[in-house]
Image (tube, rainbow, N blue to C red; front, side, top):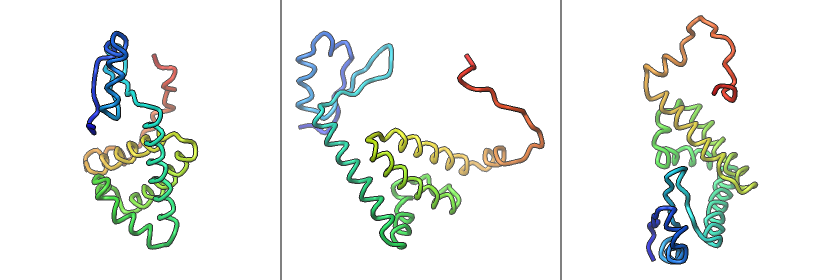
Length: 159
């Protein structure tokens, strides 16, 4: 059994559904390329449940470890640069804030079975690290320009 995901055009699923679905026996997921929209990933319900079980277990273990003893948070802080190399660009207080937010968000996301908030939080912190990695950008974003540009327009109304 291959660990790599198979990839086909969405039209293959529509036109040759049995043969295309049979590929799920050889691959954990099937990437469906679409011309008119975002690609899709097809998997079995059992495999999706297994994936959620693994993510849930990891989230619960991380949360339990971080809250168990005061030294556990220091261990997590030591491990973060290995898991997320970009944290090296964050100021020390932000690394701690990231660790706390990561644990709390993973725990909350697990409680509702939706990890979108974890992904969003990780991207936001990575962008923060990117800003800190560039002194020119950091200065531009943290310098008081002495000008009030007024209210920002509601992005939902801009079209």
